[in-house]
Image 1 (cartoon, one colour):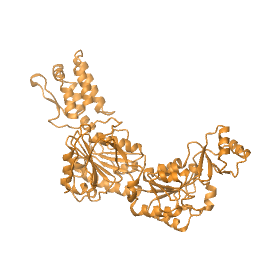
Image 2 (cartoon, one colour):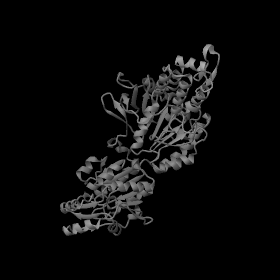
Image 3 (cartoon, helix red, strand yellow):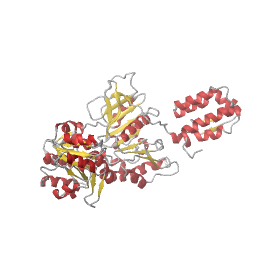
Image 4 (cartoon, helix red, strand yellow):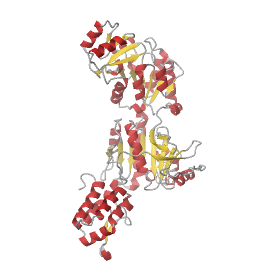
Length: 573
């Protein structure tokens, strides 16, 4: 289930002349029966609405008075989201003969043509209140409050997200809450500007339009209307012609592929930043601990602790939290089975909540490998949307998983070969490629099932600094060949440092002659550049290597500090 909540306006949308007909009520009941939430978002004063609308209990929450009052029909709990109207303003409106004038718990309401007198009264005493129109109605609302702000509160109480919400309305005061929803709908007799700014306008007017919307929501989660959405997804970059390129994993599964050092982590991080800023919830399965220290994620698991699946799900119950599942403490051979268990429980959670909006599997060739178990839960129940998978090459991944890929981002020096490898692995006919331009960043975007050739594009920059495999370089083992060896002149020593912490420890104990031998040759900066692909850190070390006035102790201290500041976390030293 992608859309878990339907938010509806009342007058002119559900109701005609204050009455909701039986067919609309039946359709609303079907929404509740599907496991979805219903939220009523209205400008009506609650005390007037309850006796008028006897079926208000169909709704999980009611946002009344244009976002100023929230009501739970089941418990009867009511909460004001703004202060009551000032007595001074009410007296001033009475003195200006504004009639009729209805006072709610927070808002004041009248009708046109009283808007001029209302504006003059508000201006005369320096009130900040807003004047909001709803067809012929004129509402006086406190500053900073509208249907959108009320909807956000209701969604938070229900554990739901605007990015999993469909909204439907018809009038001027519906603009704000419809913009808040992931998918917005106007009934056919809505005011023109509402119809102009929504994702879909129903053929039916009023309640008939709501019935039409509900039928399609329950039929296919509005997939047939995705092409018309005003939100194309999360920006990825732009083509050489300047056209913006967007990633929309909620519509299809995406594969990001390229060799080590090709920019996969940078591409992912930039997209994650933008997705989370837009309100999408991201859950990343992180085998190497590359993302767990980033501020955009809450991390579960570390070098010593395997992440608890229950804790992961508990965090994901908060729609505003994005979670990194750090598997670095899990033995390599146990990771595919862990993913299968996690994915089974995530699948059930996602079916009921629509979240996380994006499930990201890094190092997918390790977690969903081509050989071992083609019948595992994670492989056989792979959905057709909502997944981002990252791999060095598609040929290393399970075939059933690759068959569910809808779009590919290929990075590195030979992205054409990556896409050709995907075609071979999935028994597809290989695609043609346009000529590469020197202006691009060696990145190709291809929508697999569309009759288009891959597009060259440039990635948008990231805001968050990220160092690839930071934890692995800090405490892991880069391997015998890639380790640093303190050998000194004539190879009199052979002291191995397999990671940054080991380097710092060994560097503190080697003699000055050995230290200065490697310093003069530029071996320290070369190791960082070649093994860690960290040019910025290497340049900082190069500056120390080039400072000939430093003593051995000073150069040693500075280089160790550079590495520890760059690669370790609090508590490591």
